[in-house]
Image (cartoon, rainbow, N blue to C red; front, side, top):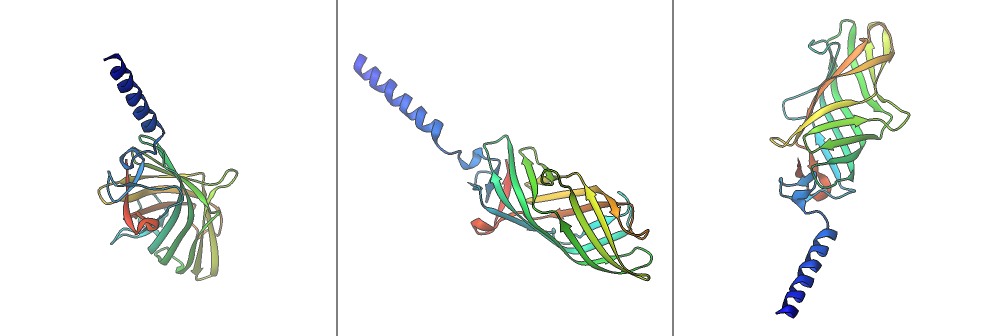
Length: 217
C-alpha cells in the first residue's frame, strides 16, 4: 500500500509539472481566433481590419460636430508581439494604417488629396476588459497629415496626439474609436485647430490563420 501511494504521488507531481510548463491553452490567452475558446493567436500573426460596413472614418472639427473630413475607406494591419494568459494585456505593432476615398464639407475646401498616418509603427495594447490603446514609439507622437485642395491652393494640415483609446467588442469583433482628439501642429487657418477622430473597424481578423475573426478574453 505504501509503495502504491508513493507511485501515485510521483505520478500526480509529474502531471502537475507538465501542466505548469505547457503553453497556455487557447481559452487562457487574451486574443483567440475563431471564438472565445478558439485557437490562441500566435506571436507574429498578422491582424487586419477595415471600416465596419456602412461606416466612415472621420476627422471632425469638434467632438459632436459634423464638419471636417470623412473617409469611406480605411484599413489597418498589425503584428502580434505578445499574447499572454488572460486576464492580461496583449500587445501589437501597427505596421500600416491607410485612408482612402475621402471628402470634406469644410467651407473653402474643394477636395481631399490624401490622409496619411505618419511615424509608424505604433504600439497597440489590448486588455482583457476591451480597452485598446494606440501609442507611438518612445520619443515620438501619433501623427496624421491631411492634404486638402482649397480655393487658395493646396494646404497641408498636420495633427498630433500622445495616444488614442478605443474599445473592442466580441459582438462583432470590432474596435471602436470615438472623438479621439488630435491637435493641429501646422497648417493654414482652413485646418481646424483640433481634429476629432472617429472610426469603427470590424471585423478584426487573423490573416495569418485564414482570416478568422479575433476575440478578446
